[in-house]
Length: 87
Image (cartoon, rainbow, N blue to C red; front, side, top):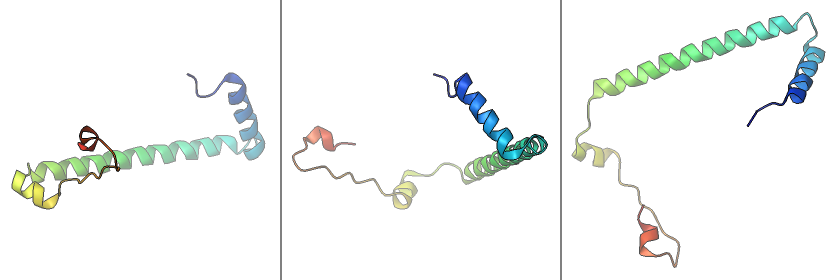
């Protein structure tokens, strides 16, 4: 499945040229590219920081986990069978 057909891609291109103008369109594309690079690098840094924090914390013992993260309670709808309640 294609996201944009050739006709809709042409329509988007014409709309962008009309909106920004021929002279400002390369500057707008350059600014968009810079923004995406910054966003990508910040995402990678955040992921590295998160992963290093998880590694430094080490594994969580079952007793600590149950106190920190209580078991999820699932309520069932009236008339639900016993197998429907188990999650």
